[in-house]
Length: 131
Image (spheres, rainbow, N blue to C red):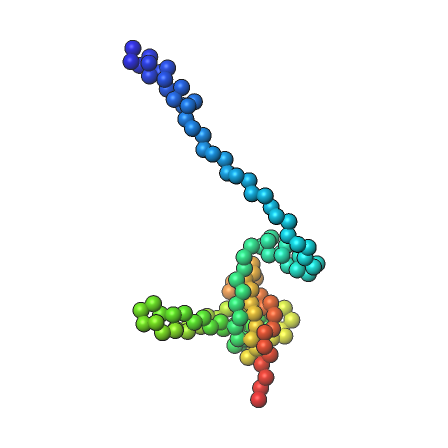
């Protein structure tokens, strides 16, 4: 008899289980109108997501359509408090071979272009001037 009572209450227990509350919908606030260039840039960034941008110095330009950019990162040592500089070199795509050794450029993450290249040169920050 105990088994008959369990069989009768089991379906009722399943039906009485509370359902999870649904997430509240968030209303989108319309943004102010953008210029065509900034609207295109915003749409492109939304399509690709966040991409890192770094500023560095061109250290090599011997390869065709490629430059090696050295980015310096300064971080604080957690134990001693001194600032430690670390240098990282990235190969970046330079379509027109316009950037030369010594130029300061901004690079941005990109889809893999070759085995080592995952960055493209976005803009020239400062031209190298030989004295």
